[in-house]
Image 1 (cartoon, rainbow, N blue to C red):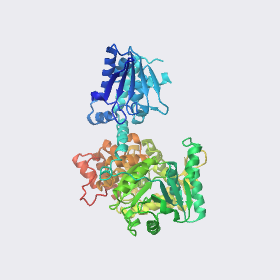
Image 2 (cartoon, rainbow, N blue to C red):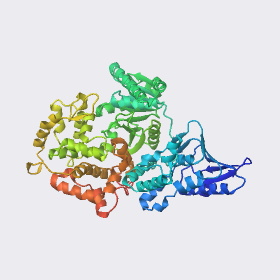
Image 3 (spheres, one colour):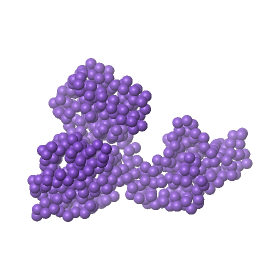
Length: 623
Protein backbone atom coordinates (compact mmCIF):
# COMPACT_ATOMS: atom_id res chain seq x y z
CA UNK A 1 0.00 0.00 0.00
CA UNK A 2 3.06 2.21 0.40
CA UNK A 3 3.07 2.60 -3.40
CA UNK A 4 -0.30 4.36 -3.11
CA UNK A 5 1.57 7.52 -2.04
CA UNK A 6 4.84 8.61 -3.66
CA UNK A 7 7.27 11.51 -3.38
CA UNK A 8 9.12 12.82 -6.44
CA UNK A 9 11.59 15.70 -6.12
CA UNK A 10 12.44 17.85 -9.14
CA UNK A 11 15.51 19.93 -9.91
CA UNK A 12 13.59 23.00 -8.77
CA UNK A 13 13.35 21.65 -5.22
CA UNK A 14 9.61 21.00 -5.36
CA UNK A 15 8.60 17.70 -3.84
CA UNK A 16 5.44 16.31 -5.41
CA UNK A 17 3.45 13.99 -3.17
CA UNK A 18 1.16 11.91 -5.37
CA UNK A 19 -1.90 10.04 -4.12
CA UNK A 20 -2.73 6.99 -6.23
CA UNK A 21 -5.60 4.88 -4.93
CA UNK A 22 -8.05 4.30 -7.82
CA UNK A 23 -10.73 5.02 -8.67
CA UNK A 24 -11.14 8.21 -6.61
CA UNK A 25 -7.98 8.22 -4.46
CA UNK A 26 -9.95 7.40 -1.31
CA UNK A 27 -8.13 8.09 1.95
CA UNK A 28 -7.88 4.59 3.41
CA UNK A 29 -5.84 4.36 6.65
CA UNK A 30 -2.69 3.14 4.82
CA UNK A 31 -3.00 6.04 2.36
CA UNK A 32 -3.20 8.54 5.22
CA UNK A 33 -0.18 6.87 6.81
CA UNK A 34 1.61 7.16 3.46
CA UNK A 35 0.86 10.90 3.24
CA UNK A 36 2.33 11.42 6.70
CA UNK A 37 5.38 9.32 5.85
CA UNK A 38 6.11 11.31 2.67
CA UNK A 39 5.62 14.63 4.48
CA UNK A 40 8.10 13.57 7.15
CA UNK A 41 10.54 12.51 4.44
CA UNK A 42 10.12 15.84 2.62
CA UNK A 43 10.78 17.77 5.85
CA UNK A 44 13.96 15.78 6.41
CA UNK A 45 15.40 16.12 2.91
CA UNK A 46 17.54 19.20 2.20
CA UNK A 47 16.75 19.07 -1.53
CA UNK A 48 13.04 19.67 -0.88
CA UNK A 49 12.19 23.37 -0.64
CA UNK A 50 8.41 23.17 -1.10
CA UNK A 51 5.68 20.54 -1.43
CA UNK A 52 2.83 20.03 -3.86
CA UNK A 53 0.15 17.47 -3.04
CA UNK A 54 -1.68 16.06 -6.04
CA UNK A 55 -4.06 13.23 -6.85
CA UNK A 56 -3.44 10.99 -9.83
CA UNK A 57 -5.84 10.30 -12.72
CA UNK A 58 -7.48 13.73 -12.63
CA UNK A 59 -8.88 13.44 -9.11
CA UNK A 60 -7.40 14.95 -5.96
CA UNK A 61 -9.34 12.73 -3.54
CA UNK A 62 -12.89 11.51 -3.12
CA UNK A 63 -12.45 11.64 0.65
CA UNK A 64 -12.09 9.29 3.58
CA UNK A 65 -12.65 5.63 2.71
CA UNK A 66 -16.18 4.99 4.01
CA UNK A 67 -15.44 1.26 4.08
CA UNK A 68 -13.68 2.06 7.35
CA UNK A 69 -17.08 2.99 8.82
CA UNK A 70 -18.52 -0.30 7.55
CA UNK A 71 -15.66 -2.22 9.22
CA UNK A 72 -16.21 -0.39 12.51
CA UNK A 73 -19.97 -1.07 12.39
CA UNK A 74 -19.30 -4.78 11.90
CA UNK A 75 -16.53 -5.14 14.49
CA UNK A 76 -17.07 -2.27 16.93
CA UNK A 77 -13.30 -1.66 16.79
CA UNK A 78 -12.77 2.11 16.99
CA UNK A 79 -8.99 1.58 16.88
CA UNK A 80 -9.40 1.09 13.13
CA UNK A 81 -10.16 4.82 12.84
CA UNK A 82 -6.90 6.76 12.33
CA UNK A 83 -6.05 9.87 14.35
CA UNK A 84 -6.27 12.06 11.30
CA UNK A 85 -7.43 15.47 12.45
CA UNK A 86 -4.57 16.48 14.73
CA UNK A 87 -1.88 13.98 13.81
CA UNK A 88 -1.84 14.42 10.03
CA UNK A 89 -3.77 17.56 9.12
CA UNK A 90 -2.43 19.79 11.93
CA UNK A 91 0.87 18.36 13.18
CA UNK A 92 2.09 17.12 9.81
CA UNK A 93 0.58 19.26 7.04
CA UNK A 94 -0.46 22.56 8.59
CA UNK A 95 2.58 22.83 10.89
CA UNK A 96 5.07 21.86 8.17
CA UNK A 97 8.12 24.17 8.08
CA UNK A 98 8.18 24.06 4.31
CA UNK A 99 5.35 25.56 2.24
CA UNK A 100 2.86 23.12 0.75
CA UNK A 101 0.25 23.60 -1.95
CA UNK A 102 -2.69 21.36 -2.81
CA UNK A 103 -3.04 21.11 -6.59
CA UNK A 104 -6.69 20.13 -6.98
CA UNK A 105 -8.31 18.74 -10.10
CA UNK A 106 -11.49 16.77 -10.68
CA UNK A 107 -12.77 16.57 -7.15
CA UNK A 108 -11.77 17.13 -3.54
CA UNK A 109 -14.51 15.81 -1.31
CA UNK A 110 -14.80 15.20 2.41
CA UNK A 111 -11.44 14.29 3.89
CA UNK A 112 -9.80 15.07 0.56
CA UNK A 113 -10.96 18.68 0.80
CA UNK A 114 -9.89 18.80 4.43
CA UNK A 115 -6.38 17.60 3.52
CA UNK A 116 -6.26 20.35 0.89
CA UNK A 117 -7.42 22.93 3.44
CA UNK A 118 -4.61 21.84 5.75
CA UNK A 119 -2.07 22.85 3.11
CA UNK A 120 -0.77 26.43 3.14
CA UNK A 121 -2.33 27.21 -0.24
CA UNK A 122 -4.62 25.67 -2.80
CA UNK A 123 -5.01 25.89 -6.55
CA UNK A 124 -7.75 24.20 -8.54
CA UNK A 125 -8.64 23.58 -12.17
CA UNK A 126 -11.95 24.96 -13.51
CA UNK A 127 -14.90 22.69 -12.84
CA UNK A 128 -13.39 21.03 -9.80
CA UNK A 129 -15.99 19.69 -7.35
CA UNK A 130 -15.52 20.62 -3.69
CA UNK A 131 -17.74 19.43 -0.88
CA UNK A 132 -18.26 17.71 2.46
CA UNK A 133 -20.58 14.80 1.55
CA UNK A 134 -19.87 12.85 4.75
CA UNK A 135 -22.67 14.93 6.25
CA UNK A 136 -25.03 12.65 4.29
CA UNK A 137 -23.58 9.67 6.17
CA UNK A 138 -24.55 11.06 9.56
CA UNK A 139 -21.10 12.27 10.64
CA UNK A 140 -19.50 15.70 10.76
CA UNK A 141 -16.28 16.52 8.88
CA UNK A 142 -13.66 14.82 11.03
CA UNK A 143 -10.37 16.24 9.76
CA UNK A 144 -10.88 19.85 10.86
CA UNK A 145 -13.22 20.94 8.09
CA UNK A 146 -15.77 22.58 10.36
CA UNK A 147 -13.09 25.08 11.38
CA UNK A 148 -11.01 25.56 8.25
CA UNK A 149 -13.78 25.83 5.73
CA UNK A 150 -15.46 28.88 7.37
CA UNK A 151 -12.05 30.45 7.88
CA UNK A 152 -11.07 30.08 4.24
CA UNK A 153 -14.26 31.00 2.53
CA UNK A 154 -9.80 32.53 12.11
CA UNK A 155 -7.88 30.24 13.48
CA UNK A 156 -9.32 27.14 15.22
CA UNK A 157 -8.50 26.53 18.84
CA UNK A 158 -6.98 23.22 19.84
CA UNK A 159 -9.91 22.46 22.14
CA UNK A 160 -12.38 22.93 19.26
CA UNK A 161 -10.40 20.48 17.16
CA UNK A 162 -10.41 17.92 19.97
CA UNK A 163 -14.15 18.36 20.51
CA UNK A 164 -14.79 17.87 16.80
CA UNK A 165 -12.82 14.64 16.95
CA UNK A 166 -14.82 13.32 19.91
CA UNK A 167 -18.12 14.20 18.26
CA UNK A 168 -16.97 12.48 15.08
CA UNK A 169 -16.10 9.30 16.99
CA UNK A 170 -19.38 9.35 18.92
CA UNK A 171 -21.45 9.74 15.76
CA UNK A 172 -19.79 6.84 13.95
CA UNK A 173 -21.38 4.26 16.26
CA UNK A 174 -24.92 5.69 16.15
CA UNK A 175 -27.65 3.76 14.35
CA UNK A 176 -28.22 6.80 12.13
CA UNK A 177 -24.64 6.68 10.88
CA UNK A 178 -24.83 2.90 10.45
CA UNK A 179 -28.04 3.30 8.45
CA UNK A 180 -26.65 6.03 6.20
CA UNK A 181 -23.43 4.12 5.55
CA UNK A 182 -25.48 1.01 4.74
CA UNK A 183 -27.63 3.02 2.32
CA UNK A 184 -24.48 4.45 0.72
CA UNK A 185 -23.11 0.98 -0.05
CA UNK A 186 -26.54 -0.42 -0.92
CA UNK A 187 -26.97 2.15 -3.68
CA UNK A 188 -23.66 1.10 -5.20
CA UNK A 189 -24.31 -2.63 -4.89
CA UNK A 190 -27.43 -2.55 -7.09
CA UNK A 191 -25.25 -2.17 -10.17
CA UNK A 192 -23.92 -5.72 -9.71
CA UNK A 193 -26.37 -8.26 -11.16
CA UNK A 194 -25.26 -11.90 -11.49
CA UNK A 195 -25.25 -13.21 -15.07
CA UNK A 196 -25.84 -9.69 -16.38
CA UNK A 197 -23.01 -7.39 -15.35
CA UNK A 198 -20.39 -10.11 -14.88
CA UNK A 199 -20.52 -11.94 -18.22
CA UNK A 200 -18.69 -9.47 -20.46
CA UNK A 201 -21.72 -7.83 -22.07
CA UNK A 202 -21.47 -4.23 -23.27
CA UNK A 203 -24.48 -1.88 -23.14
CA UNK A 204 -25.90 -0.86 -26.49
CA UNK A 205 -26.47 2.87 -27.10
CA UNK A 206 -30.05 4.08 -26.64
CA UNK A 207 -30.32 7.30 -28.63
CA UNK A 208 -33.98 7.36 -29.60
CA UNK A 209 -36.98 6.19 -27.59
CA UNK A 210 -40.74 6.15 -27.90
CA UNK A 211 -43.19 6.64 -25.05
CA UNK A 212 -46.75 5.41 -25.50
CA UNK A 213 -49.17 7.45 -23.43
CA UNK A 214 -48.79 11.09 -22.46
CA UNK A 215 -50.52 11.01 -19.09
CA UNK A 216 -48.90 11.70 -15.73
CA UNK A 217 -46.42 8.82 -15.95
CA UNK A 218 -45.78 8.96 -19.69
CA UNK A 219 -45.09 12.70 -19.70
CA UNK A 220 -42.80 12.32 -16.70
CA UNK A 221 -40.85 9.49 -18.35
CA UNK A 222 -40.51 11.48 -21.57
CA UNK A 223 -39.29 14.47 -19.55
CA UNK A 224 -36.57 12.38 -17.90
CA UNK A 225 -35.42 11.00 -21.25
CA UNK A 226 -35.19 14.25 -23.23
CA UNK A 227 -33.56 15.99 -20.29
CA UNK A 228 -30.75 13.44 -20.65
CA UNK A 229 -30.34 13.93 -24.42
CA UNK A 230 -32.40 10.92 -25.53
CA UNK A 231 -34.77 11.77 -28.39
CA UNK A 232 -38.40 10.85 -27.71
CA UNK A 233 -41.44 10.17 -29.86
CA UNK A 234 -44.56 10.63 -27.72
CA UNK A 235 -47.45 8.54 -29.06
CA UNK A 236 -51.06 9.25 -28.17
CA UNK A 237 -54.46 8.09 -29.44
CA UNK A 238 -55.72 11.51 -30.56
CA UNK A 239 -54.51 15.06 -31.06
CA UNK A 240 -56.19 16.40 -27.90
CA UNK A 241 -54.42 13.89 -25.65
CA UNK A 242 -51.17 14.43 -27.54
CA UNK A 243 -51.34 18.20 -27.09
CA UNK A 244 -52.05 17.73 -23.39
CA UNK A 245 -49.08 15.38 -23.03
CA UNK A 246 -46.71 17.72 -24.87
CA UNK A 247 -47.82 20.61 -22.67
CA UNK A 248 -47.29 18.50 -19.56
CA UNK A 249 -43.71 17.76 -20.61
CA UNK A 250 -43.03 21.45 -21.24
CA UNK A 251 -44.55 22.26 -17.85
CA UNK A 252 -42.34 19.65 -16.17
CA UNK A 253 -39.25 21.24 -17.67
CA UNK A 254 -40.42 24.76 -16.82
CA UNK A 255 -40.91 23.64 -13.23
CA UNK A 256 -37.29 22.48 -13.14
CA UNK A 257 -36.21 25.85 -14.55
CA UNK A 258 -38.26 27.69 -11.94
CA UNK A 259 -36.58 25.67 -9.18
CA UNK A 260 -33.13 26.46 -10.55
CA UNK A 261 -32.26 22.86 -11.43
CA UNK A 262 -32.35 23.43 -15.19
CA UNK A 263 -31.35 26.35 -17.40
CA UNK A 264 -33.62 27.83 -20.05
CA UNK A 265 -31.09 26.84 -22.71
CA UNK A 266 -31.12 23.20 -21.60
CA UNK A 267 -34.91 23.26 -21.48
CA UNK A 268 -35.06 24.46 -25.08
CA UNK A 269 -32.56 21.79 -26.14
CA UNK A 270 -34.59 19.09 -24.39
CA UNK A 271 -37.81 20.19 -26.08
CA UNK A 272 -36.08 20.06 -29.46
CA UNK A 273 -35.62 16.32 -28.89
CA UNK A 274 -39.37 15.75 -28.45
CA UNK A 275 -41.73 14.79 -31.25
CA UNK A 276 -45.43 13.92 -31.08
CA UNK A 277 -47.12 11.13 -33.04
CA UNK A 278 -50.59 9.65 -33.51
CA UNK A 279 -49.41 6.42 -35.16
CA UNK A 280 -46.45 4.04 -35.14
CA UNK A 281 -44.75 5.35 -38.28
CA UNK A 282 -41.75 6.70 -36.33
CA UNK A 283 -41.26 3.49 -34.33
CA UNK A 284 -39.08 1.85 -36.96
CA UNK A 285 -36.17 4.04 -35.88
CA UNK A 286 -36.32 3.72 -32.07
CA UNK A 287 -34.03 1.77 -29.76
CA UNK A 288 -36.53 1.50 -26.92
CA UNK A 289 -40.29 1.79 -26.38
CA UNK A 290 -41.82 2.44 -22.96
CA UNK A 291 -45.55 1.79 -22.73
CA UNK A 292 -47.26 3.95 -20.10
CA UNK A 293 -51.00 3.54 -20.68
CA UNK A 294 -53.70 2.67 -18.13
CA UNK A 295 -53.60 -0.67 -16.32
CA UNK A 296 -55.69 -2.59 -18.84
CA UNK A 297 -54.46 -6.04 -19.86
CA UNK A 298 -56.09 -6.33 -23.33
CA UNK A 299 -54.93 -2.81 -24.21
CA UNK A 300 -51.35 -3.51 -23.22
CA UNK A 301 -51.34 -6.85 -25.05
CA UNK A 302 -52.63 -5.14 -28.19
CA UNK A 303 -49.94 -2.45 -27.97
CA UNK A 304 -47.13 -4.96 -27.57
CA UNK A 305 -48.38 -7.06 -30.46
CA UNK A 306 -48.37 -3.94 -32.63
CA UNK A 307 -44.99 -2.51 -31.63
CA UNK A 308 -43.35 -5.90 -32.11
CA UNK A 309 -44.27 -5.61 -35.79
CA UNK A 310 -43.05 -2.05 -36.37
CA UNK A 311 -39.98 -1.71 -34.11
CA UNK A 312 -36.51 -2.86 -35.19
CA UNK A 313 -35.33 -6.28 -33.91
CA UNK A 314 -32.94 -4.75 -31.38
CA UNK A 315 -35.57 -2.46 -29.84
CA UNK A 316 -36.31 -2.89 -26.12
CA UNK A 317 -40.02 -3.32 -25.41
CA UNK A 318 -40.69 -1.96 -21.92
CA UNK A 319 -43.83 -1.45 -19.87
CA UNK A 320 -44.32 0.94 -16.98
CA UNK A 321 -46.99 -1.25 -15.40
CA UNK A 322 -46.98 -1.26 -11.61
CA UNK A 323 -49.37 -4.18 -11.16
CA UNK A 324 -49.65 -6.53 -14.15
CA UNK A 325 -47.61 -9.72 -14.62
CA UNK A 326 -45.16 -9.10 -17.46
CA UNK A 327 -45.69 -12.60 -18.82
CA UNK A 328 -49.34 -11.71 -19.39
CA UNK A 329 -48.42 -8.40 -21.04
CA UNK A 330 -46.19 -10.11 -23.58
CA UNK A 331 -47.88 -13.48 -23.97
CA UNK A 332 -49.20 -12.65 -27.47
CA UNK A 333 -45.77 -11.72 -28.82
CA UNK A 334 -42.82 -13.78 -30.00
CA UNK A 335 -40.30 -11.29 -28.56
CA UNK A 336 -40.50 -12.09 -24.87
CA UNK A 337 -36.73 -11.88 -24.55
CA UNK A 338 -37.06 -8.14 -25.31
CA UNK A 339 -39.93 -7.47 -22.89
CA UNK A 340 -38.98 -5.84 -19.61
CA UNK A 341 -40.60 -3.76 -16.90
CA UNK A 342 -39.48 -0.15 -16.49
CA UNK A 343 -41.40 0.89 -13.39
CA UNK A 344 -40.92 4.58 -12.65
CA UNK A 345 -42.25 6.22 -9.52
CA UNK A 346 -44.37 9.37 -9.72
CA UNK A 347 -43.42 12.02 -10.65
CA UNK A 348 -41.19 10.07 -13.02
CA UNK A 349 -38.90 12.97 -13.88
CA UNK A 350 -38.20 13.63 -10.18
CA UNK A 351 -38.28 10.35 -8.22
CA UNK A 352 -34.85 8.67 -8.29
CA UNK A 353 -35.86 4.99 -8.40
CA UNK A 354 -36.31 2.83 -11.50
CA UNK A 355 -37.47 -0.73 -10.86
CA UNK A 356 -36.34 -2.96 -13.72
CA UNK A 357 -38.53 -6.06 -13.83
CA UNK A 358 -37.25 -9.13 -15.58
CA UNK A 359 -39.13 -12.28 -16.49
CA UNK A 360 -37.63 -15.74 -16.95
CA UNK A 361 -37.24 -14.90 -20.65
CA UNK A 362 -35.90 -11.32 -20.51
CA UNK A 363 -32.39 -11.30 -21.96
CA UNK A 364 -29.38 -10.19 -19.96
CA UNK A 365 -28.55 -7.71 -22.74
CA UNK A 366 -31.91 -5.97 -22.36
CA UNK A 367 -31.46 -5.76 -18.58
CA UNK A 368 -27.98 -4.27 -18.99
CA UNK A 369 -29.20 -1.78 -21.59
CA UNK A 370 -32.05 -0.58 -19.38
CA UNK A 371 -29.75 -0.31 -16.37
CA UNK A 372 -27.51 1.93 -18.47
CA UNK A 373 -30.47 4.06 -19.55
CA UNK A 374 -31.52 4.37 -15.91
CA UNK A 375 -28.13 5.72 -14.92
CA UNK A 376 -28.09 8.07 -17.91
CA UNK A 377 -31.38 9.64 -16.82
CA UNK A 378 -30.08 9.94 -13.25
CA UNK A 379 -32.10 7.12 -11.75
CA UNK A 380 -30.94 4.32 -9.49
CA UNK A 381 -31.92 1.14 -11.36
CA UNK A 382 -32.85 -1.81 -9.14
CA UNK A 383 -33.40 -5.14 -10.91
CA UNK A 384 -36.28 -7.16 -9.44
CA UNK A 385 -38.25 -10.28 -10.26
CA UNK A 386 -41.67 -10.51 -11.85
CA UNK A 387 -44.43 -10.79 -9.23
CA UNK A 388 -47.56 -8.93 -8.15
CA UNK A 389 -46.58 -5.27 -7.56
CA UNK A 390 -42.88 -6.19 -7.90
CA UNK A 391 -40.61 -5.20 -4.98
CA UNK A 392 -41.41 -1.79 -3.47
CA UNK A 393 -45.19 -1.62 -3.89
CA UNK A 394 -45.51 -5.23 -2.80
CA UNK A 395 -43.40 -4.69 0.30
CA UNK A 396 -45.41 -1.63 1.30
CA UNK A 397 -48.93 -2.87 0.53
CA UNK A 398 -49.51 -3.66 4.27
CA UNK A 399 -48.46 -0.09 5.15
CA UNK A 400 -51.81 1.56 4.45
CA UNK A 401 -53.75 -1.57 5.34
CA UNK A 402 -52.16 -1.65 8.80
CA UNK A 403 -53.06 2.01 9.27
CA UNK A 404 -56.65 1.33 8.18
CA UNK A 405 -56.88 -1.54 10.66
CA UNK A 406 -55.76 0.78 13.46
CA UNK A 407 -58.51 3.24 12.53
CA UNK A 408 -61.05 0.42 12.66
CA UNK A 409 -59.72 -0.41 16.13
CA UNK A 410 -60.53 3.13 17.23
CA UNK A 411 -57.11 4.79 16.91
CA UNK A 412 -57.24 8.43 15.80
CA UNK A 413 -56.43 8.61 12.10
CA UNK A 414 -54.42 11.81 12.40
CA UNK A 415 -52.43 10.39 15.31
CA UNK A 416 -51.37 7.50 13.08
CA UNK A 417 -50.07 10.00 10.51
CA UNK A 418 -48.22 11.99 13.20
CA UNK A 419 -46.52 8.87 14.56
CA UNK A 420 -45.38 7.73 11.13
CA UNK A 421 -44.14 11.22 10.22
CA UNK A 422 -42.20 11.38 13.50
CA UNK A 423 -40.49 8.12 12.52
CA UNK A 424 -39.09 9.89 9.46
CA UNK A 425 -41.53 9.26 6.62
CA UNK A 426 -42.30 12.49 4.72
CA UNK A 427 -46.02 12.04 5.44
CA UNK A 428 -48.31 9.52 7.06
CA UNK A 429 -50.27 6.89 5.12
CA UNK A 430 -53.55 8.85 5.11
CA UNK A 431 -52.05 12.10 3.87
CA UNK A 432 -50.18 10.05 1.26
CA UNK A 433 -53.47 8.51 0.18
CA UNK A 434 -54.96 12.00 -0.17
CA UNK A 435 -52.04 13.09 -2.34
CA UNK A 436 -51.90 9.95 -4.50
CA UNK A 437 -55.64 9.86 -5.09
CA UNK A 438 -58.28 7.38 -4.03
CA UNK A 439 -58.52 5.75 -7.45
CA UNK A 440 -55.09 4.23 -6.91
CA UNK A 441 -56.10 2.98 -3.47
CA UNK A 442 -59.26 1.28 -4.80
CA UNK A 443 -57.42 -0.39 -7.70
CA UNK A 444 -54.54 -1.78 -5.66
CA UNK A 445 -56.81 -2.91 -2.82
CA UNK A 446 -58.67 -5.24 -5.17
CA UNK A 447 -55.43 -6.50 -6.68
CA UNK A 448 -53.83 -7.27 -3.33
CA UNK A 449 -56.98 -8.88 -1.94
CA UNK A 450 -56.92 -11.29 -4.88
CA UNK A 451 -53.17 -11.93 -4.95
CA UNK A 452 -52.68 -12.25 -1.20
CA UNK A 453 -55.98 -13.68 -0.04
CA UNK A 454 -56.09 -14.43 3.68
CA UNK A 455 -53.51 -11.85 4.71
CA UNK A 456 -55.06 -8.54 3.77
CA UNK A 457 -57.36 -6.20 5.70
CA UNK A 458 -60.34 -5.01 3.70
CA UNK A 459 -61.49 -1.60 4.89
CA UNK A 460 -64.44 0.31 3.38
CA UNK A 461 -63.01 3.69 4.41
CA UNK A 462 -61.86 4.80 0.96
CA UNK A 463 -65.17 3.80 -0.62
CA UNK A 464 -66.98 5.80 2.06
CA UNK A 465 -64.77 8.82 1.39
CA UNK A 466 -65.52 8.68 -2.34
CA UNK A 467 -69.25 8.22 -1.68
CA UNK A 468 -69.15 11.41 0.40
CA UNK A 469 -67.64 13.44 -2.43
CA UNK A 470 -64.08 13.39 -1.13
CA UNK A 471 -61.23 12.91 -3.59
CA UNK A 472 -58.26 13.97 -1.52
CA UNK A 473 -55.95 16.62 -2.89
CA UNK A 474 -57.65 16.39 -6.29
CA UNK A 475 -60.67 18.35 -5.04
CA UNK A 476 -59.07 19.81 -1.92
CA UNK A 477 -61.03 17.61 0.45
CA UNK A 478 -59.95 14.28 1.87
CA UNK A 479 -58.86 13.31 5.33
CA UNK A 480 -57.14 16.68 5.15
CA UNK A 481 -58.22 20.05 3.79
CA UNK A 482 -55.98 21.24 0.96
CA UNK A 483 -55.93 24.98 0.37
CA UNK A 484 -53.59 26.73 -2.02
CA UNK A 485 -50.62 28.30 -0.27
CA UNK A 486 -51.06 26.47 3.03
CA UNK A 487 -50.16 23.11 4.51
CA UNK A 488 -52.79 20.35 4.60
CA UNK A 489 -54.92 20.57 7.74
CA UNK A 490 -56.83 17.70 9.41
CA UNK A 491 -60.51 17.88 8.52
CA UNK A 492 -62.65 17.23 11.63
CA UNK A 493 -65.73 16.76 9.46
CA UNK A 494 -64.34 13.38 8.35
CA UNK A 495 -65.13 11.86 11.75
CA UNK A 496 -68.68 10.64 10.90
CA UNK A 497 -67.23 8.77 7.92
CA UNK A 498 -64.61 7.18 10.16
CA UNK A 499 -67.27 6.14 12.66
CA UNK A 500 -69.28 4.50 9.88
CA UNK A 501 -66.14 2.61 8.84
CA UNK A 502 -65.63 1.43 12.42
CA UNK A 503 -69.23 0.23 12.55
CA UNK A 504 -68.95 -1.70 9.28
CA UNK A 505 -65.64 -3.41 10.05
CA UNK A 506 -66.67 -4.23 13.62
CA UNK A 507 -63.23 -5.39 14.79
CA UNK A 508 -62.86 -3.44 18.06
CA UNK A 509 -62.48 -5.90 20.95
CA UNK A 510 -65.67 -5.71 23.01
CA UNK A 511 -66.78 -2.79 20.87
CA UNK A 512 -64.36 -0.43 22.61
CA UNK A 513 -61.40 1.48 21.12
CA UNK A 514 -58.01 -0.06 21.85
CA UNK A 515 -55.43 1.85 23.89
CA UNK A 516 -52.04 1.96 22.21
CA UNK A 517 -48.79 3.85 22.74
CA UNK A 518 -47.14 5.71 19.87
CA UNK A 519 -44.52 2.95 19.70
CA UNK A 520 -47.22 0.29 19.35
CA UNK A 521 -48.89 2.29 16.58
CA UNK A 522 -45.58 2.54 14.74
CA UNK A 523 -44.94 -1.18 15.08
CA UNK A 524 -48.44 -2.22 14.00
CA UNK A 525 -48.00 -0.21 10.80
CA UNK A 526 -44.38 -1.11 9.98
CA UNK A 527 -43.96 -4.68 11.25
CA UNK A 528 -46.41 -6.01 8.62
CA UNK A 529 -44.26 -4.19 6.04
CA UNK A 530 -41.21 -6.01 7.40
CA UNK A 531 -43.19 -9.26 7.21
CA UNK A 532 -43.96 -8.71 3.52
CA UNK A 533 -40.34 -7.72 2.89
CA UNK A 534 -39.43 -11.14 4.28
CA UNK A 535 -41.69 -12.80 1.71
CA UNK A 536 -40.08 -10.73 -1.04
CA UNK A 537 -36.66 -11.92 0.13
CA UNK A 538 -37.84 -15.51 0.51
CA UNK A 539 -39.13 -15.60 -3.07
CA UNK A 540 -35.92 -14.18 -4.50
CA UNK A 541 -37.64 -11.12 -5.94
CA UNK A 542 -34.48 -9.08 -5.25
CA UNK A 543 -30.84 -10.06 -5.64
CA UNK A 544 -29.90 -8.99 -2.13
CA UNK A 545 -31.61 -7.51 0.92
CA UNK A 546 -29.78 -4.21 0.49
CA UNK A 547 -31.41 -3.85 -2.96
CA UNK A 548 -34.80 -3.83 -1.25
CA UNK A 549 -33.49 -1.38 1.35
CA UNK A 550 -32.34 1.21 -1.18
CA UNK A 551 -35.46 0.67 -3.32
CA UNK A 552 -37.68 1.45 -0.31
CA UNK A 553 -35.59 4.53 0.51
CA UNK A 554 -35.77 5.88 -3.04
CA UNK A 555 -39.25 4.68 -3.97
CA UNK A 556 -41.20 5.09 -0.72
CA UNK A 557 -39.01 7.74 0.97
CA UNK A 558 -38.27 5.40 3.87
CA UNK A 559 -35.82 7.45 5.98
CA UNK A 560 -32.29 6.86 4.70
CA UNK A 561 -30.79 7.27 8.17
CA UNK A 562 -32.68 4.13 9.17
CA UNK A 563 -30.91 2.17 6.44
CA UNK A 564 -33.96 0.70 4.70
CA UNK A 565 -36.76 -1.59 5.83
CA UNK A 566 -34.66 -4.78 6.23
CA UNK A 567 -31.69 -3.03 7.85
CA UNK A 568 -34.03 -1.29 10.31
CA UNK A 569 -35.80 -4.57 11.07
CA UNK A 570 -32.49 -6.26 11.89
CA UNK A 571 -31.68 -3.43 14.31
CA UNK A 572 -35.09 -3.83 15.97
CA UNK A 573 -34.62 -7.60 16.12
CA UNK A 574 -36.36 -10.36 14.10
CA UNK A 575 -37.34 -12.21 17.28
CA UNK A 576 -39.17 -9.19 18.70
CA UNK A 577 -40.92 -8.52 15.39
CA UNK A 578 -41.98 -12.16 15.08
CA UNK A 579 -43.34 -12.33 18.63
CA UNK A 580 -45.25 -9.07 18.13
CA UNK A 581 -46.85 -10.26 14.89
CA UNK A 582 -47.76 -13.60 16.46
CA UNK A 583 -49.49 -11.81 19.33
CA UNK A 584 -51.43 -9.55 16.97
CA UNK A 585 -52.37 -12.49 14.74
CA UNK A 586 -54.06 -14.15 17.70
CA UNK A 587 -55.87 -10.92 18.56
CA UNK A 588 -56.76 -9.53 15.11
CA UNK A 589 -56.36 -12.27 12.51
CA UNK A 590 -54.35 -13.36 9.48
CA UNK A 591 -53.20 -9.89 8.39
CA UNK A 592 -50.45 -10.18 11.01
CA UNK A 593 -49.51 -13.83 10.38
CA UNK A 594 -45.69 -14.08 10.43
CA UNK A 595 -44.06 -15.30 7.24
CA UNK A 596 -42.07 -18.50 7.14
CA UNK A 597 -38.89 -16.56 6.41
CA UNK A 598 -39.32 -14.32 9.47
CA UNK A 599 -40.22 -17.25 11.71
CA UNK A 600 -37.16 -19.26 10.65
CA UNK A 601 -34.75 -16.41 11.19
CA UNK A 602 -36.31 -15.39 14.49
CA UNK A 603 -36.05 -18.94 15.82
CA UNK A 604 -32.47 -19.43 14.60
CA UNK A 605 -31.20 -15.94 15.45
CA UNK A 606 -30.26 -15.24 11.83
CA UNK A 607 -30.43 -11.64 10.49
CA UNK A 608 -33.13 -11.03 7.91
CA UNK A 609 -30.56 -9.68 5.46
CA UNK A 610 -28.59 -12.94 5.40
CA UNK A 611 -28.85 -15.54 2.60
CA UNK A 612 -31.36 -13.77 0.45
CA UNK A 613 -31.27 -15.35 -2.98
CA UNK A 614 -32.65 -18.90 -3.37
CA UNK A 615 -30.75 -21.37 -5.52
CA UNK A 616 -31.45 -21.37 -9.23
CA UNK A 617 -33.35 -24.66 -8.84
CA UNK A 618 -35.67 -23.24 -6.19
CA UNK A 619 -39.07 -22.66 -7.87
CA UNK A 620 -39.53 -19.60 -5.64
CA UNK A 621 -36.60 -17.77 -7.23
CA UNK A 622 -37.74 -14.82 -9.40
CA UNK A 623 -34.28 -13.82 -10.64
